[in-house]
Image 1 (cartoon, one colour):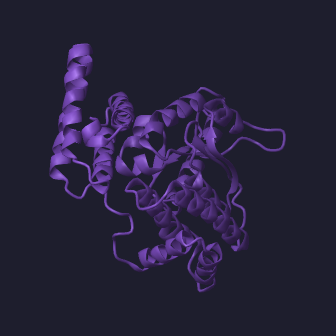
Image 2: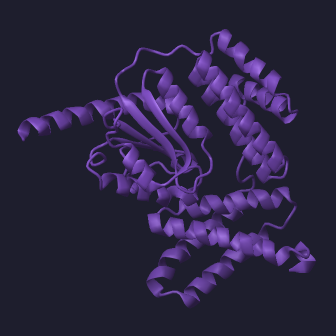
Image 3: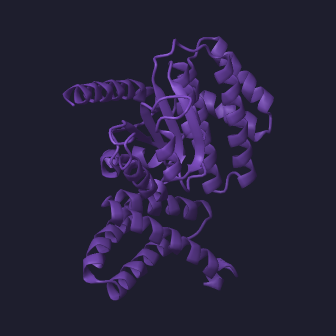
Length: 336
């Protein structure tokens, strides 16, 4: 181990294995093997970037499979074995693994590259000027957020993963983007209020909140009242926040974000906690984030009403769900 990976080799492999077991547990619990396969491909990308032998990754999975068969009850190993086998097959078939988010050609991708370049040079003023000019020239708020800011931030995460950017780079770019987003939001005209309130938050354990802040800003500009709770909000706090407060009635919609696959069951737990309350029994719930883009039906698995690939694309669905919910509640009230 030390000859192949240096003095820290065993410690680093322990971290790798623990992360892989966590993703396997999530995949088994939710019966979605793509969670585990996606993590394996993500790891292979990192191996290739670090000029490590990705064959060792396949061998590690084979070892994991053997240990699970040896030490776990057969009903468990019967679930894990095919998942691990499929992950090994994908590792052998996929040469490129996880592609750079900005590898696609297109006008917005070019703008995202330019925006990110300014931030990597620590020139937030120039990045902000670029965004301001695009807005003044008619590019819609949602298009700027989803076509430039989001791809740029996904790219910096990818760059960190393949050792093309540091943690400091990622933190600077994220914080600068949040500040630029707030400036742009404050300067963008809002539509007339539609009378509906959405509570938006990242679930407990998820320390990322840029995505949910973008959704909140887009919904606010479209006329929604928005209460954004930010990152890492416990389930009981979410459940209590959607209930009527002294200063307002109950929320009309709940939007939940999970940035990584390890937070999916947290989403499921939040939804269960919300559904157990009077205010949350029938509230429409939207879910979003990277795992929900990976697996089409994941929203059904966690018990939500719908999932959104982008915030702007979810607006129509959200409005329909809220109107349907209000109609059902009125009919139920009249029946009583």
